[in-house]
Image (cartoon, rainbow, N blue to C red; front, top):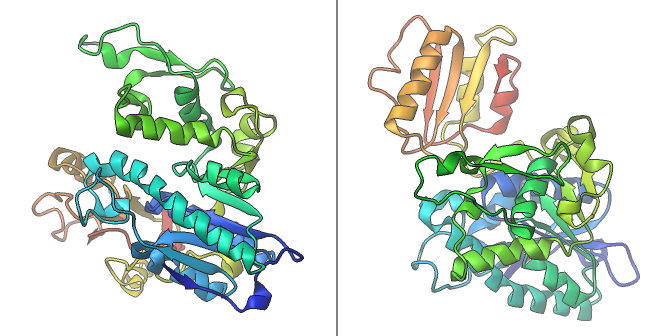
Length: 376
């Protein structure tokens, strides 16, 4: 177990201000918004400790550089019979079939994290609140043992938060058999979500669609979501102008708890509090200076930035469709293609459309904020 610990006077004590323990889920799209929230809390003078496994500790470097008062708790990744040895400590390093067992395995961090919290209390640095990603619901009983509030954080919208928990709280009953040819088109309605939205079965959460009653991993994931419903409240990376119906009153599908909007987090604190610069999310595949120099040659609002994230590599057919659409658009573009995406042969050859293809992931986030970029 390793820690980056600020000077003692910067940490909360029983007689001082609050000391917030943040527990991110180790996936880029989950972790980065929670680190942005950590920056906002630190900027407001709260003592903050972020707990991660050792393989993810380096991702906190930009945050710690900007806010040296933020403490980092680095825990050994727990061994698990559900995962092959050396599987990786972040979902970007995992094959998709290991996502679910990986999620369930992280619950083994509860015991060492509880021991650390108790030790902090004995040294006058008591944790006074726990904020965790909604994929780490095992922190809710941890907070209960500590006798402190637990807050569930969603890196995305409140609608997704409500629907995800509705599925686990009151699972819909399927009227069609899975083997029926139109089973994936079966409509599922969420009557207690504002607007009572309806979606085909195939559009529901993949975590839920893979649920098998009695299966160890399935039941562990279900329990994570049910634990979240015991939180004091929910915090979502959204804003009231977008989702007023979800943040102005408690929602039944979230156990009638309040949802507080704190987004969009990437811009929430501006240059002083954002962790979006530097090596946010890890080392970029292409130097930001190279991308910026390429973009500098274009007028304001004239370049399209294309990225499907760090998790999913496009199939050859999908990549061909994207390439064809980009070529037909006649717009200049940057395409950040994840490692494993099969960019069509000859696509990068000079033609009438200006293009920059980045293989192996996206450049730094600030590249997508360049004055020349009009769509992301």
